[in-house]
Image 1 (tube, helix red, strand yellow):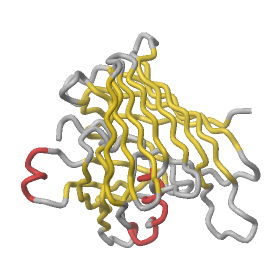
Image 2 (cartoon, rainbow, N blue to C red):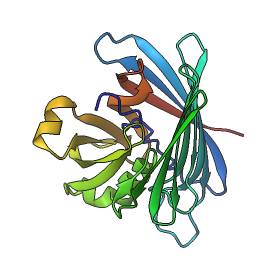
Image 3 (cartoon, one colour):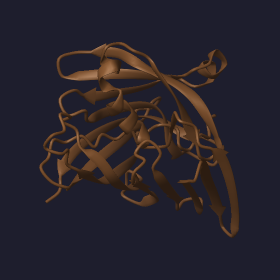
Image 4 (spheres, helix red, strand yellow):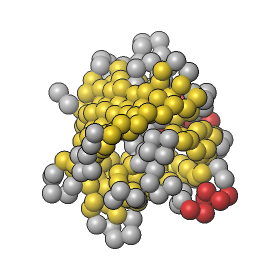
Length: 243
């Protein structure tokens, strides 16, 4: 489980801005090691979002795509990721390039299957899993949060299957509200099993309430510390609209 390269950072990124046209938003996430508090990497997201229709009562915009670069604190890029939401925002197409280890991982939906590709140097492996109705892939989790926003705020617990691309398997998670004040709301996510919960700490995510922006993420990330484990970090996000 420690090698779950697509745990749940992200990725969780909010693409929720009440805008009047298709717009580009830049999100910067600064990650700090949970134990030492030292900076470990920076993720830079260029998110294309689409406006809600005039008749849409939701204030949040829908994501179209996300281009991500991951860099060390000194600015050197060591990984990139592309997320294409298309017509399936819960299960987007994802391509992750780990430049440090010369690895490439991809996932996309084909018919009623989830296709996962692992590439390293000249080796290539392909796997397929059946598409589940409650499946969430990578940054599709942000869509899941926004889809269930009202019921989560009303203290309902939601469960979903999250795809671990590196392990070619899914895990059942549950998410519920754990704290709320005037401007923010915090959700806690745990594996929906007693044994799994013993090995993975809860993931804690805090959103701004008005526009549903992800403010902080705390827990296991999708960024490898080495070939066998990922960073556990607190990530603080800031946003700005690009001209």
